[in-house]
Amino acid sequence: MNMREQITFDVQEVYKILAGKIASLEMQLAAEQVAKEAIVNYVEELEGKLGILEHEAN
Image (tube, rainbow, N blue to C red; front, side, top):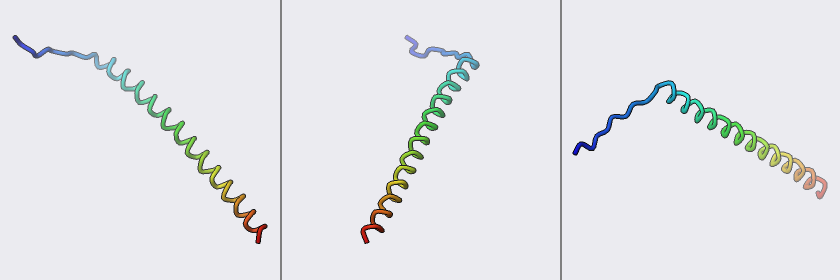
């Protein structure tokens, strides 16, 4: 019994699937970048407020 099977792919269909996956990953990366920037901005804002409070306390 021959266990090998021949598999053929439509190149355009493969490109379409890969393009969809790449687009999805790009969107996920962009969303994560926006979230990271928001967190960094928030931390910087809190550090600024902490500096003001420390200055006022002295």
